[in-house]
Image (cartoon, rainbow, N blue to C red; front, side, top):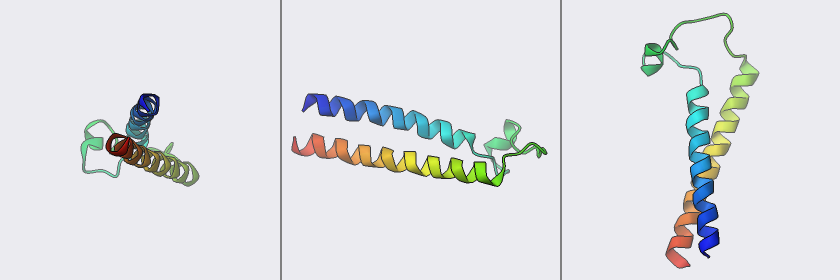
Length: 80
């Protein structure tokens, strides 16, 4: 079981980093920290609707996998 725990911890770290990167890739809506870093400036080269939807789907998928990994790690810690 130590191997399963190690694998889940590695997956948790990978999914955490991926989730952070994907959230930072999203287009800023204005009025927050994104304005401070230039996210509030409109440009004609903004992301298309399809690209934004795919980024949303990928972000949600990674975050769900992150949550499942957290639950799995908790189960392993509790019962095994």
